[in-house]
Image (tube, rainbow over the protein chains, first blue to last red):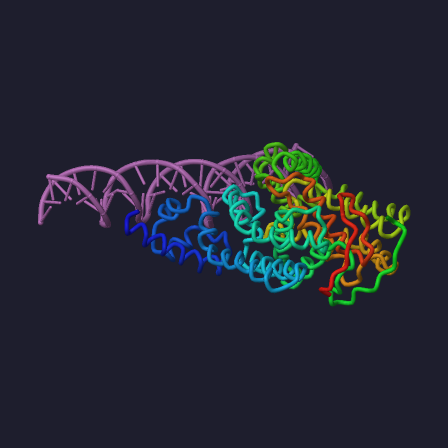
Length: 198
Length: 198
DNA sequence: AAACTATACGGAATGCCTTTCCGTTAAGCA
DNA sequence: TGCTTAACGGAAAGGCATTCCGTATAGTTT
């Protein structure tokens, strides 16, 4: 790779990071190239699909998220480790403006993104999940990928709702992963009464 | 309203229904107007925002969904009624190609859509939810609107997954709404063992 | 250090789509 | 029958993604 190409890639990643923070992950191509001081052709040459650019920009944070799984797994009991990591994951996905939407937009420019992200994150979470399952804490009928995909869906920012909305709903979903003896959810979950519907 | 205008509105609704089925709710305006045999100006005059068109096209089905709540509430116990209606709702949202995405796209053309839909559907579901809550079946810390919004998120079609994926994950979320004594979910939920994490 | 070659550059061009605008048409009424 | 005005249709304007290709230059060879 020629040295000018190398420089431009760095400049583009830098610019994209700024642009993503400012306008979300579908910032107009021109905004990025102007910031980087290159032509649009150069952007498309190095990152033909938007997902290539996003993955490259986020690679650091992805790695950190992956690493956190091992740490949490070593520190906490299985269920607590699982919950903590999912919180971190949901924050990662929900905080990057537009990332959650891009993940499921159907726009071909983002086709590779879910694959790429999940391929990296799934093994990390899979370890936590199997521990929780074999310990009897979590239901056994969901795959790791199912959970990650669904939390990405739940993390879409909803206009008119606080960011905490997504966290609360993620928590409900995670509660649904528990087998029984639901943990206190901290907001007045009542002691239950049985019913006859099942 | 002039009679030709009346006719065109009908033609547009018809065409939009077809186009939505064929290309999803963000079918190009031209596809719709060509089908209807009118100019694009006519589309925008009658339906300035895309959401106006969508709501008009779906109004029938929305009404049916609202009506179903009363029926189910009268027929089943509270929890079963709640679960059944949510299944119906999720199918409605998930089946219309692109509707779930449009609901949370952030595109200003769809700004009114969530409001409009939820304003109609929320009261129907609210009745079911409060029954379930006061009967002690469902947790009390979620609002009806929260549940509808979240199920709309979970109902986004995910490329590479069966449609049943969304149903299964919706089911996990709904399980999370239960207070205790989770119902059998039908796919090998194991009898639980307690743990010490809570 | 000059010439050469292949790599990479920039931005104009293309294509698709939304949305607006306005000259033209025709519905409904007197 | 003629008038008024609501409504029409499609051209035009604007925005953005993506491609294409003539030009520039890094790196290499002599």
